[in-house]
Length: 388
Ligand SMILES: O=C(O)CCC(=O)C(=O)O
Image: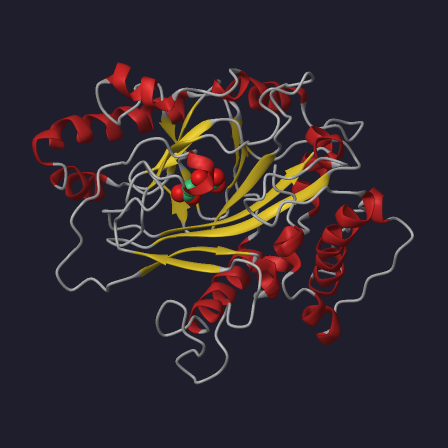
């Protein structure tokens, strides 16, 4: 079943002036192409417990796979309530110290990057030097409604320190088994971030590839910059979702300006949207060309990202200094950053005691208990993000 988004397609297209019909056709055709790809279904392992070969092959071919229904209804309800609570703790204005209840707001007192706000429907990164200039072109910025707020939440980095629900989802055992299948049992964490795409407000993220450090690495391959799990709280559509260009994760660093010049518009012809329902989780290769348009439609999107790397991609590597300060990631650094995963597994075990917990090999032998002191110890854990 796919959500009927025809009303959103109409309202979205209407923002694009002379390109309205082209945008409408692009959204409709993109959704059709996305649904025709053979890369969606439940997480499956074979009799030996190995990730199903067809899933592995499809992920390799396209650079993404939609795990249908990966999050149970029970956990999804937890996450929805947790995100509502999290948002109620946002500051009253960007950079504010207190929330509406007068308590210290999310992000107040953090050294690490956390909550960022931007102008509604803007493309804050496109065509700028931010993030090493990876967003090479600015996307069309539709006009927000007259009564829209001045700023809308854009991203929340390091979210697991602010939400027990997000922390527990980090330890989803089947997803972590997928992480081990793709990146090896000794896989390492990367970075965790929520993208907010509220209807009529959510900003665009211009076309880009995520990797930084390993494009010219002698052992470059499709998986060297890792992947993100993108957990969809409300679903994801052609209008509000991330679009990807399948297969580009194998092609090295792409000239996105040239791709757009060749296409004659920002509507890259081979791209497809991530079409998901609530509770679906996409595994998305960081090297894929991807981006999202401003959310001019009616459906909300909120994506909870959890990133993972191969250990060999980060161990003793000098980071790019983007998600965290540039540092050489020695074993102690990686171990310290991985504690968040150890705590996530403990927190999840307490909430879902009947579920077989994931055994994270690099922390074998260590015991984790998730309590108030452990929660406090997560403060600024993302200063150690493994930014490559
Ligand atoms: O969720 C989005 O709109 C953008 C996601 C993205 O660019 C990323 O996860 O790297």
